[in-house]
Amino acid sequence: MSSVANGPNPAHASTAHPAGPKHLIFAPGGSTTHAQAAQFTKGVLSAKTLAASPLTQFNAWFREAQASGIPSPEALTLSTASLPSGRVSGRVLYLKELDERGFVVYSNLGHSRKSHDIRTNAFASMTFWWREIERQVRIEGKVERIDQAEAQRYYDTRVRGSRIGAWASEQGQVLGRRKLLSKEDTKKEVDALAEVEAEAEEQERKHAPDNSSSATTAKPGIEEASISASGPEEEAAKLKINGDILHHPHPEEAAFLAAAVAVDANGKPDEEMGRHILEDRVREVEQRFEGVEKIPVPDFWGGYRIVPDMVEFWQGRNSRLHDRFRYTRDLDLGEDDAPWTLERLSP
Ligand SMILES: Cc1cc2nc3c(=O)[nH]c(=O)nc-3n(C[C@H](O)[C@H](O)[C@H](O)COP(=O)(O)O)c2cc1C
Image (cartoon, rainbow, N blue to C red; front, side, top):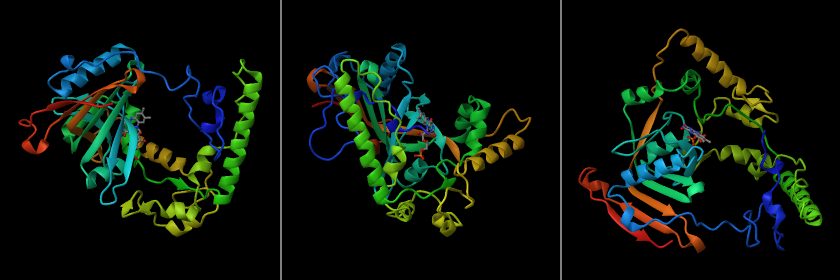
C-alpha cells in the first residue's frame, strides 16, 4: 500500500511549523519567496483571441496542451452531487470524446457512485488543470447518457483486458471490510507521526543545505489513520447517510460489521479484503467470452456526455491576477438556439 506518509515532504526544506495545532502537512508550497506557491507567468489570454464557441476554444487549448507534451491532458475531475442530500463527490476520469454537443467520458453507469449521483441530479462539472501551461478549464452542464451503439464503438477500441474488466467490476461496490482503529488510537498514531515529521524537519534544518535524504523515515500508514477518525460502527453506518445509499447494504451486514478482522464481502476472514472476489469474477467473464472477439458492451457501462452551459478558461498570471473568461448560455432555450455570452471575470 502506498502511503502519503512514506515519502520525503518537499515542504520540510523551508517550512517552519508555526505554534498551534500539529499539522501533518502545512503550506506545502513552502514559505520562502523562491519556494512559495509558484507565480504564473507563462502566458496571457486575450479577449481578442477567444473563439465564438467554448467547444472550439476548448479544442484549441486541448491541442496546445497535447503539443506541449503534458502527460495525460485528457485527465479531468468529474464532480457530481447527489440529491436530496446535496453531497458532492469528485473523481478523476479521462475525456474520451469532444463533439459538437459536448464532452464525453466512459464509465460504469450502473453501480458506481457517480452513476448514483447522476441518476438523482443530472448536473455535473468537469475540471482540467494543465500545470505546464498554467491553464485551467471548468465546465458545467447537464449530463446525458450516450446511446449504446456509440458506446459499443468506443468499447471496441479498448484492450481486451479493459473490456473484460468493465464486465467484471461492479464499480464502487464493497468487496471487503475491516474495523479500523479507535478514535484514541488514531489520535495517538497521528501525534506520533507528527513527532517523527517534526524531528525529520529538525534534522533537515541541521544538515542544510544538504537536505535530500533525511525525511524518508518509514512511518505507519496515515491513510488508514485518517479515515478512521470515528468508531468503525459509525464509519460503516456512514456509508448510508442523508438518504444516500453509497453502497448496497450487504445481506450479511451484521456479521460483516461485527467482524474484528478483515473480511471479504461474504463475511469470510480475508486479509486482502475481497480482492479474490474481483479476480474470480474476471476469470468467470473470461470464460464466458472465450473465443469471442467482439464482446458486447455491458448494459451497465457506457458514456456520459456533459452538454455545457458554462465553460471557463483560466490562464494563470503574475501576482494571482489571472485571466478568466466565462462562456454561459441558457440550455432551456434549446441547445441549438441558446446563444453563448462571454464575460471576463475578476481573478
Ligand atoms: C488518471 C485516471 C483516469 C481514470 N479514468 C477513468 C475513466 O475514464 N473512467 C472511469 O470509470 N474511471 C476512471 N478512473 C477511476 C475513477 O477515478 C474512479 O475511481 C472510478 O470511476 C469510480 O468512481 P465513483 O465510485 O466515484 O463512481 C480514472 C482514475 C485515474 C486516476
